[in-house]
Image (cartoon, rainbow over all chains, first blue to last red; front, side, top):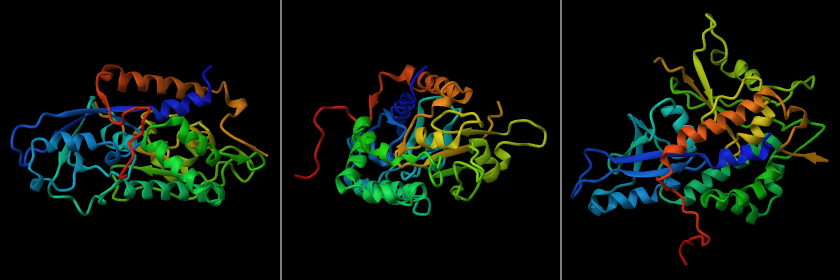
Length: 275
Length: 52
């Protein structure tokens, strides 16, 4: 039987084959070929698409290039969501590669945050980690770390260094045996069919009586339609990192093993494919 | 006293086995036919520095 640590590696090294095509109305000096990349599921779009920008720069005039933004089938892709979450939420059950359209004009101000440098991504990433640690340990672990440890978490993600990241991140995953888990589980539940960006509430990994809370328990409370339906037919898929964990899976274990590097469990609830 | 990562009694649980199986299927589905694609982050010994 494989070791639990293998799950951490599988999660970290997940890649999504992606084809980037320039939007048809962008002004170019000659035709632009698509660009193909393997995107790390746990990273952020604007952190890993320098090559895409450089590729299209070759066929465009500088003055025609505003801030790059990305779109999939009419949906502007939020760079501040992890890549794997964006794919699971918007493109699950579609053929690979993932076809992303690249824009340099008409930035969708109401849908996307600007991302002018990697410092913006770093600040967002660190604020998520801090929020997660407030939920898990009242912020005590992240606050007791040194600045260089914070930097190591970020550099580990930025440079795709699993060991560098986990040498520090493991401290954020510890808990006392008496408590049986984190104080609260940092999770966010996303759906495409709602205007609400996501569901996030306080939820403990164990009941007041000490019983383990499962993924099913969480969904029953936060999004009951995802686990039950009147006719008994399954209407939704509950996806984390491209897989559908069983509803019996303990939430504490999920939080330790299937959280993104920002320390949140990002859960996509998507309608079952009809075909 | 603190512990992390492994929960021994759960080692043989069905949910756990299923996660391993699904992750391995995911690798096949998402990566097997695309090994010729370029990696978005280069894995080199030398890490590029920003402005010097």
